[in-house]
Length: 242
Image (cartoon, rainbow, N blue to C red; front, side, top):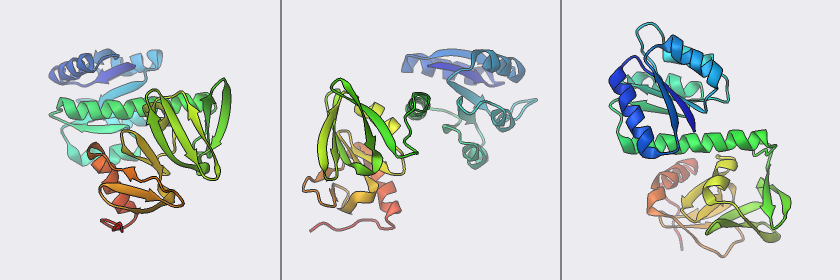
């Protein structure tokens, strides 16, 4: 992943540099000068830019507005009041200083998802249009997102269970497939399961049941944030299971 960090505080840049080395797989260039940093962005066209908001001579939000849409932005600032404005321009994430590594790691996971979506778009995949293309044996199979009931991980493969259609097996990781699916329509509730939101019949903080499906889907402890979002989406804290 090619990244550029722009911040007028050298200490902040050193922290990002240290975290990038710890995370691995990141080619990072840092700039205390917004002018020089943006010149590098223009010539290098990185995948992600870490961008401070309040710098001596420039405002990071205004800089971000002028960047190409396929470059992801992660804002880094001490001022939480900028968060809403930052997300309004579709930033990948907003890191409030002081930045701690676990939070940085979460932001990079979001960046990887963002890059996967950009790549899928360039290859002609269209989750927003309602289809994804999966490799099944030696063929490319176009799958309607509306047909997918749930997905189960199986090592470096996935099983895609569809409504009134045969289950298919594709050689793709769960992480890659999750990034290619339309987010509002699907949610990952377990390291081994992704479910269709529109097909949920009832759920608790441990198990989800889908319409016309006998297979109970477990809710993993590490995915409680997804469960909370699910509860909020259904305007209920929990739907009791019988």
